[in-house]
Every structure is written in C-alpha cells, then in structure tokens.
Length: 382
Image 1 (spheres, rainbow, N blue to C red):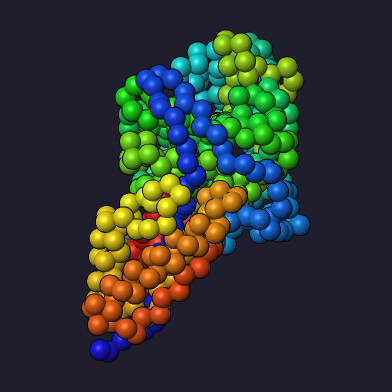
Image 2 (tube, rainbow, N blue to C red):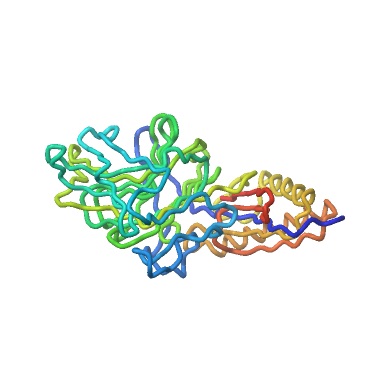
C-alpha cells in the first residue's frame, strides 16, 4: 500500500464523573462537583488556562491556537485599544424576565487591556442601578469550547458568562454565574421545554483572576476553572444540539431581593478565546460509570474509525484519555488503552499493520484529528 504523508489521528476520552439525580420540571437539580482544591496550581491543569505573561493585566495571556487538540482556534481577543473589537453587540434596556434591571452601552468600556462591565447608580436613569452586558450574537456555533479570563471587583451585581441559543429557549449553558457573590459560582444547564436545570457549584475567590471554560461536544458539557474540571453534564437528554453564542453580562436583581449592589462594582475581562470542534466529528457512546470494557456500540464506532484510518492512509493515531475529575487519570488511561487495543485489532483485520497507535493521557477532549491541512475527524468518549 502506498502510504499518504503522516497525519496525526487523535482519539480522546472524556471520562465523566458520576452525576446522579433526577431533574424535575421547573426545578434545579444540584449535582456535586468532583472533590477538588480549587483554585490550584497551573501545573495540575488539564484544559487550557492561558500562558504566563507579565504584560497582561491578569498575568496570563490567551491560550495558544493549538491548546486544545481536536479543536481549532475560532476567535481570540485580549481587548487592546479603547473600543470593542468587531463582532460584539452591547446590550441596552431591561433584561428579559428582570424588569427591575437596566443595561446601557455607557456601562461597557475597554481600557488598559481590559473589557469592563460597570455597575453604578446612573443619574441618566433616575439613579437606578445600571450595568453592562454584551454578546457575540452573530458568531454562532453548535459545539465548541470557550474560555474567559475574568474577575469581580466586589459583591453586588450578578455576573453570568454563558452560551445562549440563536432561537428559542431553553437551552442555556451558564458556565460562571455568581448571584452577586464573590465566594462561589454556579454552572447551570437549562434544557427542555419545562426548563429543567442541572446545576453545580464551586467555592472560589471571584475577586482573583480565573480562567472560566466550557467545552461542549455532542455528548458532553464540561465546566472548567483554571484548567481543572468542576462539573460535567453528559445525559443525552440534557446536552444541547442547537447553535449558540457567547454572552458576557452583569445584571442586578434588586426587584427580587438579591444581587443588588451597595457600591459601584466592575466585572473585568482580560481576554476571550473560543475553539470550534474539528470538522467531520463523530461521538463514541459513553462508558458505563467506572468501567473500562468497551460496549457493543463503542466497538462498532471504533471499527468504523479503523476503516476510515485504513482508507485515508493515516500512519499515526493517538488515543488520548482525558480525565474529568481529579482522581480520574488512571481510569482515563485504562480506557485509552482499551480503545487502542481494539483499534489495533480492527486495523489488523483490515490488513493495515503499518499504523502506529499510541495511548496516552493528556489535555484534550476530542478524538481522531487529521491535521496538516486535511479534514479532521473527532470521537468524543464520555
């Protein structure tokens, strides 16, 4: 067989933590986040958190374009200059469902390498508390990864970093929501016509800089802070499959008796980076919790991938197990090895023994990725 130039094929495993509990219409299901020591050192990070840079206001620059294998960089800005970069739309008026709130363009500013959303009693609005909010409303995508480096100057207005659907609601993915506090944050996934909610919470000092992330694939939504996972949603009925866009908003809920400032406060954003899944992605059925053995459905998917690898002439395949809980590294590695073994078996049946297949554990959430300018294929395993 004449081999094509070497191309990297990556198969990543998203090892989901066990998150039990039923969801009820209109109710919020609180699911425990994995045991952790958030925040922690960058050395323990497994997802992108950024690159050390003393010239950045937060001390950390955006991640590299290759920080998330299996994904391609879609957008990055660190808010230099004195005006918003192209593609951002600023909110004005009252927030839907919160008639006591008010947004205004004058409460969004860019200066000193920072985007700031600023809450103060605005004389132009009768002394009402007014806040800032904006979105990349026209930059929609189905699936992808978003990372936002931000901090709060103090308590008062709630801050939400979220993904919002192009049409209809739910779904909604809130990957950092403060409720006006500075000591903890929520992540909430809204789904279904009855607005079911799946929510996790983490304790964290929000006055310090943090990199908040959400990695959204066809099978899984992973929440990250400073490169570490603090929540996972992988129930098939809960994961959204519609185009969504990134929103950053500061908001008051004085009419509801919470998230009501007592002093001027700001949300500061150093940078935003987003990634799209590599094209031609597929999803491997999730592993049964705690198990390593492949199911029949998983074997069928791996067999299909083996056929594609042999047909395309790939020479190097990386099976990468990515842990989604602090103690999940060993399990992710064993699952990667199990997939590697079965992939080699299927390739042998196709008389393709020239492919090098490596099983490793690393910082990726996707799968088989053909690089070097060729089309990419991804397999996600939860």
